[in-house]
Amino acid sequence: MDQLVVAGKTYSSRLLVGTGKYKDFAQTRAAVEASGAQIVTVAIRRTNIGQNPGEPSLLESLPPTRFTILPNTAGCYSAQDAVRTLRLARELLDGHALVKLEVLGDPHTLYPNVVETLSAAQTLVKEGFQVMVYTSDDPIIAKQLEDIGCVAVMPLASLIGSGMGILNPWNLQIIIGNAKVPVLVDAGVGTASDAAIAMELGCDGVLMNTAIAAAKDPVLMASAMKKAVEAGREAYLAGRMAKKPYSASPSSPTSGIIAPAHNKAA
Amino acid sequence: MISLTVNGERRRFEAPLTAAQLIARLELTGKRVALERNGEIVPRGRFDQQPLSDGDRIEIVVAVGGG
Image (cartoon, rainbow over the protein chains, first blue to last red):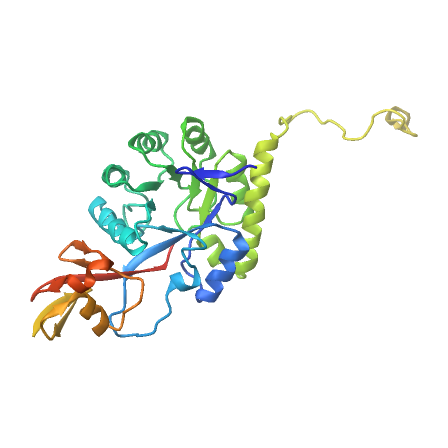
């Protein structure tokens, strides 16, 4: 059985989904179910302090007994803030070690700050976290993050929430070729074909949020993404045919044609 | 009375006050939260033994939707 292995744990789904930007928790849950994802990301934020008692909680809709909850550091712009956030997340999730590290560079592009990311990864790995790390599509940085001990490297396809698809498949292929840990495309997927292309390139998985949540029908898009990731993975494993740009090759037999082509000439 | 900064907001509470009592006053008992006191995590299992002091900075966080 073809499975994703992250930090020694196996997952049958190679699609990881975020839980932001949904209308309500019911829609979040329905989309997660339709996606087939087993790993779901969450953010860590200040709770209301009595302003809104009885407010429903996300983890009641997505119980950690059923899903692998992947706390992220979205919104952190320094290694220090990211580490602090994940220490709180580990406490919140009863010692859970698998986390998603992202340290952003600026609020306009949300592009990763790789210097701070490397620094945070070093601290987190030393503290026993299993770090899945969001990064740029720079193959050198990706390798350094792996060498530090990150359990998965997750380069962007394009900017977070942009839906622009895979802007640099060549860099992704270099990263995939160099890596001994899983490589997942994280951020930038817009529609199902983008996810399929990521998998056809040889990615081990895809992490997305906005492409599903911002679709007109998020639950249907979640289902589409599930199929796209599966299709892309199967195509990758099957090994695509060679491209032959200047020579056609018929799929049907060339003999036994009742009206051979040469008879039709002129 | 003691004054705490909870999630960036100044609030006054009757003393003595433990972390567990603060959680109860904020109607968060039984919720899955994590608490930080002056930058140090207080494990949930020790909320009832953790006294809070005047001027403490408290952060209480939950998991929310995010990518």
